[in-house]
Length: 193
Image (cartoon, rainbow, N blue to C red):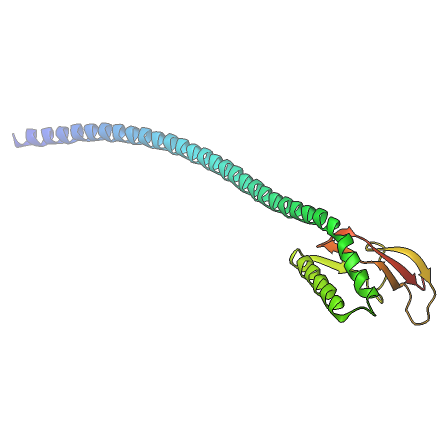
């Protein structure tokens, strides 16, 4: 009998081996299916991540463009405000320039006048100069300056050995500007042009 047990044991071993082989084959098939499923999920996840990254990049680009557009708008409106202020100031000062010219002519022609009158007109002239300074208005066109056709209107010319070439010899009317904007050109006589 002991032989039968051995034979049965071998049969059992063989049966177990067949069962194990079948189970292993089934496990391998299942693991391959799981791996395929994981690979498919992984590919889908990669595609989703790539799609989300593209959407994020598009939104970031859109945001950056909007920020740049806003910055340009802010700068443009600031420049327009400054320009409007300069234009309004220039227009108001244009109306005051004849008064400034009259005060300066009065000072130039009061050589033999009462010192109190001269002092009063000098005070008025100084107040006008301070007001123009507060408004950032600069005068230009002085004797000895170089002639610049962008700033000066040449009314006449004169030959002079004392002055250099293209030099202002006489000023008939002072010029004024605010920043780079010319309010009024200076009327001058130019030497040696």
